[in-house]
Structures are given as structure tokens and as C-alpha cells.
Picture 1 (tube, chains in turn brown, yellow):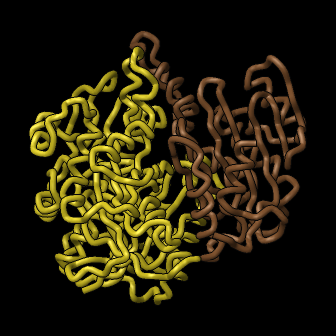
Picture 2 (cartoon, each protein chain N blue to C red):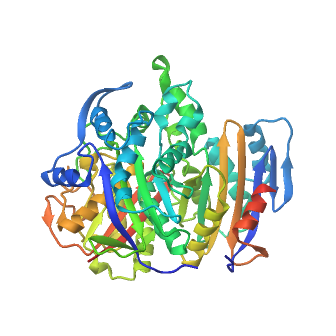
Picture 3 (cartoon, rainbow over the protein chains, first blue to last red):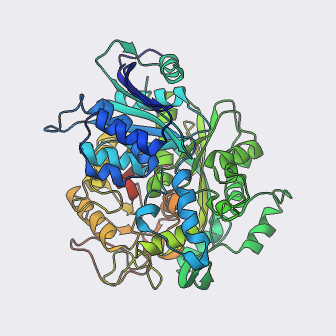
Length: 204
Length: 378
């Protein structure tokens, strides 16, 4: 299916490397995710104290989104950029940590600050808050990346007029295994928005 | 391209503590029964109220559809809900299964030796997909407490886009110590059965349930509703607190009305979210007022079923359909005196009323909201 929409920007975070539009912004060796993502936040000059309170999944999704939005959003106006995110593990990385906090009767410390992150769509809320995106948003879970679904749902939002642009993301995090692939779909740009291109960029 | 073809919900079912089919549920609701019961002990929690499905009764009913005992409680609830819907509607090459859930088989984490796959949502949905023989890959909507309503939006949107001919939607969440302790840690749990919109309300009562609907482009000859507009807009305000302005819900409602292109004055009924937390119910009243629909009859079904999380939105649509077909709105159980700052028409008693247009709304953690407008046909 051909549409008039394009992928204007994309970002990938995996294996201790941050790439924006195919250019490596940061690459580190032999570090764990918390250390890497802290450096990545510096690399994109993120100044947002709330970032450090987020769980791993939200940090990953938020950073992938910020790497694109910081140059593509005017916070003085209302931006109708929808957010469509998905992954496989849902919030299981934090779920396991929360479960540990309630599994020992002698050491029982359920925390609301952890519990709130046991929903995968919280990362979408974090991106919405930072960029004041009062826009369409959804979080889906699949066994693996579904370029066709992402493309169809995004095209629906754009063609129906429910959104002007859509920021899409695959944000997978479980026990230090992670991958983020975030991309912005809008009218302008040269890279066609279709499932083949999306899959190619995801695999690259 | 989007074909603006009408999309219908033509079949529905649910499995709750009040019954394992739609007729039993409706009869119990009309009588004013509630599934919420006092629970002396649940894991480390004592003296709480929750709406829980009796496992023995569930197992007994499940034997009528399968003797496979490896299914979890939640899987049995989901299969039982969908079973009669699948027997009446054929699964084709272009049918899709959509699952709405927040936590799936989260209680699998209690067994530390179990593989993590047991708690993965994709493992759960694959079992259901295989059980019924779906030919396409399933979709899971996991968007906090709006999931059940957003799943219906997703079906409508994907069918209008031409990706599928029809969709079988299931929604379910189970009671677990995981979720109970979490809401408790937020101090969001009511010490008595929840009382949405009431002056005495002081938090949620949790529940478990499953629901199923069939969504299609084929206009049926029997009772059905058309999905005529929808929106799912974020508050961009707080990850765990409802917006003070109701912005996201207001915008979601406006988006649904704009698409449906009907006058606000035509709306007959709102099946609202009404969790009975102070801030959620207040936020909804503000949003309804901003959308000029604060004079429309409204209820929350949380007083009957508790908050069933990922199941709630779909379950409440299923019950709203019964209200439409039976021309009877249900009292908002637990409500007697207004506890929101803007007067809204919360139903104190069951009311005989013809309903042509109704609105379903939901709001949840992460600042999410969803609204869908339905129209009765036939």
C-alpha cells in the first residue's frame, strides 16, 4: 500500500549504541544499561530530572523518543503527534522486581513508585508529559516486531485525521536485553512509509 | 485507504462472579446483585473486599468446553467467554483475535522456578489463538485500564483500514496479590465496597472477569450496535494521577463525536469508568461538563464487578449492549449522594429508557483515556 506519508526520522538503541537517522551518536563498550542510558541522555543533552526516576523500559522508550522529538517539535504550539508503541516483554522487567518486593513475608515492601511502572504504557505517558502531547496513544504487545500492524495503525491515524504525525516505537526491555527502534511518520520526508521500509530499518 | 464502512458489534458474552453467560449476568444486575465480597485473607492482605470468580465453579463449567487441565484460571475465563461467540461466528482467513489485558498470567511470577514465558502476554494469547484455530497473528492491547475500550477501537480501526474482515475481542484480568498489593500501596483501595461518584467514596474495589465480543462489517438482522466514532487521547499530565482538567477524556469524547457527526443532544446514556477514587470520578465529571454531556444519564458498573482492569472496558460495553437491547439502564450501584463538584445525572435506580446512542469511556494510569460512541441498529 502506498501513501503520501514518509518516515522523516528514526532512532535505534541497542548493544550500547545510540543511532539517530543512521548516524552513531554514542557507542560504549562493556557497560550495563543504566550506565549506558545515563551517557546517552548526556549525549542528546537531555535535561529532565524525572528521567532518573523512570524504570528501564521508560528510560529506553523516552530516550528513543527524545532523540527524535528534541529537533522536531515546537513546544510553543499544540503538536498533534500520536504515539504508537509496542514490545514483547510488556513491563515484565519491572514486574519481576515488584514481585520480589512482595514474595518474602518477612521482607514485604510493595512500593507505589515501582508498581506504577508495571504497565507498559507508562513509558508513553512519560513521553506525552514531557512534550505535552495530548494526542492519540496506544501500547500493543506482540511476539515480535510487526511492521505491517504498525504501518496500518499509523496510516489509519494519519488518513482519518486523528493525528498529523505519528511517533512509532518498538521498545523491548528484559533483564539487560534491550532494543529500541523509534521513528516519526509525517507528510514531509523522502523515505517512504510502508511495511517493507519499516522492517528494513528495524533489521539494519 | 480507509473505507468508512459501518462496523458492528453483533455478539457478546462475559464471565464474572455473577455468572458465566450474559443472561445470568443481566438477571443478577437487574436485581442489584454484586460480585464484591469480603475476603478475610488474600496472600499477605487481610480484610479486603474483592470480586472473585469461584474456581471450582469455573473448572466445572470449563469441563463443558475442554478437559485440558493445563490452562490457568485466566485462560479458562477467556476461553469460556469467547466459546459461544466463536460457535456463532465463523473464523476466516481474515479474522483476528484481539486480547485486552493489563497483567495476563502475572501470578505465574509467584512460582520462582517457572520460566518467564509463563508470565508473558504473548504466551497467553498464543494458547487462546491455537485453541480456537485462528489463522492470523493475534494483537494484544495493554494500555492500562482503557485496554478493553481501546481493543474495540483497534478492531474498528484495523477493519476500516482493510487489514481484517472481522475481529474476535477478548478481555480479561485476574485478581492477584501482585495487583492487590500494588493498589494497596497506592492507598487507592476502598475499605468498603466501592461507591463511584458518591460523597463517601474512598477508593477502588478490585475484581476479576472476562468478556468477549464479535466485531464485523456484516450488518446483522438481529439486535446489534454500530461503532460510529472513537478517540484515545492522553492527558499528558501525570503517570498515576488523573488530570485535574479532564483534558484527555474531553478530547477523546470530542474526537468520537466529530467522527460520528451527531449532535450531543442525541446522546442517551454514558457508561463511564467510575473507579470511585476521589480524583478519577471528579475528573470524569469535569470532562463530561466540558463536552456538554453532563446532563446525560450515567453509571459506573464498578459497584457490581469491582474494577476488573483490562477486562472492565469491554465488560462494561457488553453490559451496556444489554441495557440497549432490554431498554433498561442500571443503577450506579453504591451511589446515593453526589461527591463530584459538577452535577451529573448518576443513575440512582434502574430506569426504563430507550437508548439509540450511548458513549463508553475509560481512563487509566499513564494518562490514557478512550471514548467510543455506539448507535443501536435494528
